[in-house]
Length: 253
View 1 (spheres, rainbow, N blue to C red):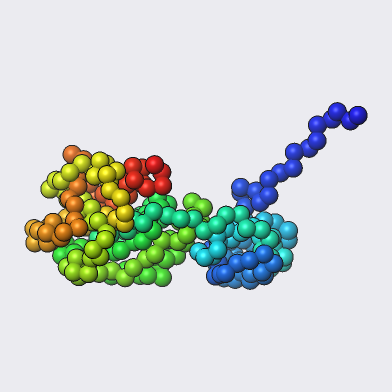
View 2 (cartoon, one colour):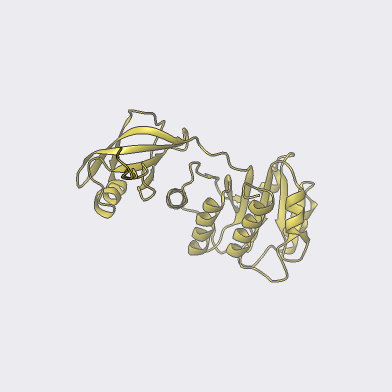
């Protein structure tokens, strides 16, 4: 009897396989053409060759393993083989973040995606330095973040809205946790005690003005919370609040 140990078959697809979001729906046997920047990434950066594994997501059907069928300088052809995961279910949490300077809001978008926000609602306030959002660029940032952190569901990105309009159209069944630098209930127990759809509202570089703060606090569904004893930058408040919510009430709990 041969007692020699059998060689361990490497896992497929390997954890190091590149990951891409592509238009769907994906299914076993589907051929997926890759062009442009994604093709450059596969062929030039990752040096993917025929037979190599690529992990694909379509924001519809989940995560799939595919193989490279052909690889050129400007285009790569993939064939889908096996579904690895269903599309993930993420907690029903919306991050309502005031628009910040471009690099700072880029950070908010990236980390909100990584942390698991279902929806991102940019908000315009009187003290916002920025007043517009490049949606194509913002979506590209979200896709890149989702690929990096292995999300199978892209966050929904809403059009920027003024804070007064946001409050007028606020749904009856969604709690709004208002990160108020002037104080409120401790955020962690407030988050942990809540059940159902929720949102977190964070402010701009200069904070909310008095009229905005009064309007927010007067909303029936609003609940002012504090994120600690220190005044946080806009991007820090958004990331900290989202992390805390995921830890005590979201899918980290």
